[in-house]
Each structure stands twice: as C-alpha cells, then as structure tokens.
Length: 419
Image (cartoon, rainbow, N blue to C red; front, side):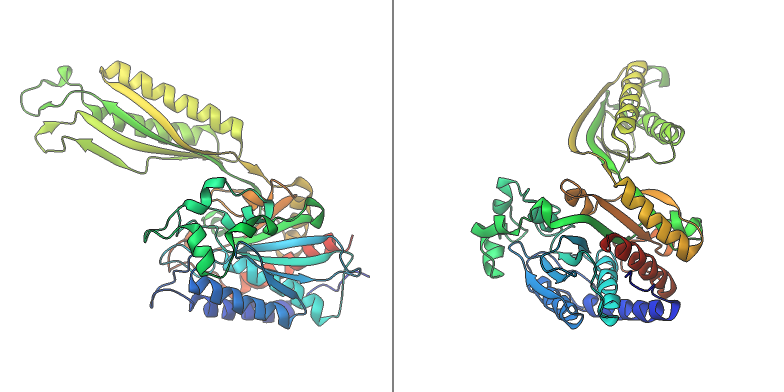
C-alpha cells in the first residue's frame, strides 16, 4: 500500500521544523555572529551529533562513517533492502547562509518523519546522509564526503593542509577518525537504487518565473583558464593611437566579445572574466601586459567545448589585429553531470502536482550529486531562494516554499521507494 500524500497542514508543520532546525544548525559556528563550519572541526562533529539525534527521533539507525559523514537508515519492509539515498552537505563557506546544503538534509528528514508518523515502511529503505565536506573551505579540495561514499578519494588528499598547516590525515585523527579506514566509507553500487538531493537554487531563475520549485537537468561542466594579452608599454602622451600595442584595449575588446558571444550561443551557457590585472599600472602609461581569468560553464560538454573554442579563436584574432600576443592556459576542468532522465520525470510530476507546473533548469554550481552520479542514478530538486543569493548571510528561503518542497519531495521519494 502506497504512503498517504502529505497534506498542506502536515507540510507546513514540517516546513516550520525545517526552518527552526536550520536556525539551530546555524548557531553551530566557529565564530560568533556569522556562520562558518568546516570539515572535521569541532563544529562539524557537533552538527553531526545534532542531526543524528533528529534521525533517531524518527526511527532511523545512525552512524558516522569513516570520512565524517553522518548517516541514517530507515528500514524498508525487508531488512537489508536496497535504499533510496537522500542528502546534501552540512559544511559551509566562510560567513555563509544557513540553507545551502542544510536545507536538503533537513527536508530529507521530513520525508522519513512522515513515513515514521504513519508507521509505514516501503519496499526500499530510505537513507539520509549529511556530507561532511562539499565546499572545500578548509583544505581547498571539494566533495570529500560524497567521494568517500564512492571510494574515489585521490591518494594525495590526506596530505593536503589547511591554513594552519594541519593535514587532512591529522585532522581526521584529531576528530577521532582513522585515515587508514577511509576505504570503509565506500558503499557498494548494490546498496542504493537512486540518489536525490534537494538544494536551494543559488540563482534567480525560479524567482523570475514566480515558482517555488524546479527540477535540475544537469550540473554544469566548467573550465577555468589563466589568460594574457602582451603588448608594449609606452608613454601615454607621446605614442600616437595608431602605433599603440595596448594590451588592456585588446583585453577589453575580448571581454565584450565573451559577453555577446556567450549570450548568442545559448541560454544555459555562462562565461565570466572574474579577475583582471594590468601592468605597469600607472595612469600615464599604456598597459603592456594584462592577466585575466576566464570561467566558462555549460550543462553540455560539447556545447562548452564549442563555445570555448570560439572565444579562444577570437582572442587570437583580436591579438593579431592589434599587434599583441594572446595566451590561454587551462588549469581546471570538470565535465557536466547530466541528471537521470527517469528521476527527473518523477520529480517533475511531483512538482507539477503541488505547484501546477514544473520548470527544468541546469545547476551552475557544483553539488555532491557530481560525485554520487558516478555510481548511482541521481537527480536534484531546486528550491527558490530570495534574489538568488547564496554563500552569504542574506541567503533566504520562505516557509511556504519549503512546505511545497517537502510535499513534492515526499511524493517523489515514496513513489520511487515503494517499487
């Protein structure tokens, strides 16, 4: 027998709990007056303990795994049944908002709470995980928690150090974990049938569409490059305009091309010049050297490759016309992560039932689903956040949107888990 659908009053009560618990988690911070909670810190372990207590209140068995993720299991009709995995992360950036990551864990608990309240067990179990590190704030490496589950920690991670010179291995020991047991966090592919992650959008699209919820199509792939234009510095008053080899003018022309070409290329591609420096850097000297960065993202790898090729070719063309040199060196690349089509459909149906229609959109930010999708079918549900603000204390969601999210998420999860 399928679980009853969570009604409006039940969803609002769940949303109030989510908001209250988000406030309680936000109080667990390394600094007063702002939220900062990093991997393997005392605050991380305290948050794990608090979440474990909430899990146990709703009939879940809990444990902290070998890389510091907090995990809970609500059993299915048969002990040891395959599970649906739900979750997100409990770590934060510095001076963070209180919903990025945490909202997904807390809403997942409300799915289980609804089943526990109705004394229901489904064909599949439900597991919830609060990942220990998605942001990479402390050690500069990301997805440590989710890559623990997939067994894909690179060998060099244990030696990475934080700003105080403490290595990952040392931090694990200080937190009561054994670096020699990292492999025990890995879960076999047979343990889970699917992974679903609820997350704030971290962008303005849902707000622009006046929608509370949306279904993610893919997590964008990204490339980052260090670029430069090199010309000749010269006296600002004595070098005639036609004879100049102005590196900054070349860079400015390329930057405007990047903006216009990316807009023409497609609605889902984005490109950003995030840093710019020029030398010699004096008011009366023609810039001879400009260093700039390019960040380009797309939910489709082939589209990203084509756009990047176009942008780099234009950089070369501009340099040639202006008599300067152009160079670009890629230092970061991650492929796009498509969300599972069948899971997208299940989420879209649930969203349509609670808000009238469903919108599909890509995620421009990274998530734990990037790692999890390497082993299990994965999908994401986005919740509107005010003005698209994230990674900032002004990050905000409203109770009514969270209620709709709990309704849709519960419908989708119970449908999947009752098969």
